[in-house]
Image (cartoon, rainbow, N blue to C red; front, side):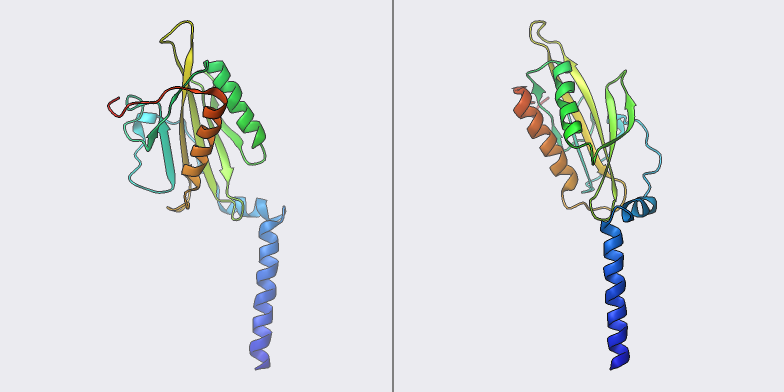
Length: 184
C-alpha cells in the first residue's frame, strides 16, 4: 500500500516537473529541438497536392495558379503596396509567434514558422502577393496562403482557422473588389 502510494506520488511529482518544463521558457527550446522543421523550400503553387489531409489549408486567387485548393481568395480593392503594408501589420502584431524563415522579394513570396503553444510543433505558413492591373486607375491585389503542419496529420482546424483570420483581417482593412466565381 505504502509502496503504491510512493510510486503514485513520484509519478505525480515527475508529471508536474515535466509540465513546468514544457510551459516554461526553458522548456520551449528543448521541445523545439525535438521537432525541427527540416528543409524549407519555396512553394510552387501548382505542385501542391492536398490529398484530403486535414493539417493543411490552401487559398489561391484562382485555379490557374493552384491545381488543388481549399478556397479561392478575393481580389482586394487595394494596391499591391497597400496589401503588403497590411500584411506587415499582421506580422508585426504576431511577431512573437511568426518567424520569417524564407523570403523571395522578386516574387513576393514569404514563409513563416509558427509553433503550437504547448508542444512547440512547427507549422509553416507561406504567402505570396499578386497584383491585378485590370484598371489603371484602380490597382488591385490578391494573396495566396498555404498553412500546413510539419508533423502529425491532424491540427484541430488550426491551419484553416489561421488562414480565415488572416483573410478576415485583410478584407476588413482593404475591402473586397471581387470574389471569384465557381467557373473561374
